[in-house]
Image 1 (cartoon, one colour):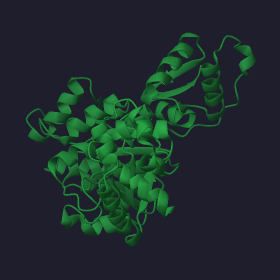
Image 2: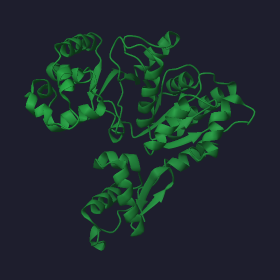
Image 3: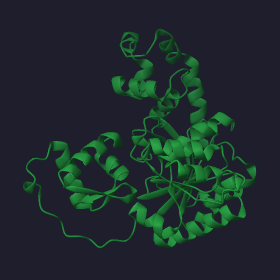
Length: 369
């Protein structure tokens, strides 16, 4: 770990009034974490939306003192620090405009698995929900053995998903709404420890942060952003799972919901997601895997070369070449590998569809026509 760089990265998240967008603007203009704290005031004043008051907060000596204390905690507990520019940072998150600048990670797993799902749901899970969750993950472990399961370590569906993933040797990651100096709820501590061997505990919050209600709302955007698909298994009429589903939709993630009887309170939210076309009806593992385009496929011969399509723009040509080499590919994976925002990528893919060069498949997959 580069101690100096880590110190200033932590400090950047400790400045009062500097959120994700401000910090990204500072990094874009200044280009270096340490320089932000040592840069000439006049250069800071030239940055859009950076006021004199905010510059005062940046220069506050207490910011670095708090960062030094946090860095000591990181080193003592052998945590990983992942900055948004690091290769090990969850690359799916980099496509989200409000992604955290810095993540604190405890564990031993790659956060960029080829296939990831977030499994979420009510804390007051019923037998119906828990049984489906266990069977779903068990079958998924056979069909997609390199899958990573993400959830929030909460009561109900969250902990059920983590334990099922552990049982079937899938990597599993818990996104927490507090610092890594604690595990909440405490009763799930043993499961959290077991997860460290083939998974991780992950948070954007420094040590000493309490599991307050508003932190769970912030946590949910990471749960949504790290996954290819969000699976909602039981939700009441209101709840954090519905918020996460809305966020996932805004990130162009696939959202699935388990239906239930109209008389079941813990199925009300899922049924509404489906009826409002905010989620795909989850009926079987076959349907899920098929929709995501995750069936095992034989390697196809490489298609005709780009010379056959002389009217491609530079951006279209890059996408064409990538899909021709990779075969069917999920749009979020394509966005990450080409470093193109999903919203921009969709527009170019649409142009390629119009030209009958690519075809869209269920689950946000694309292949050559």
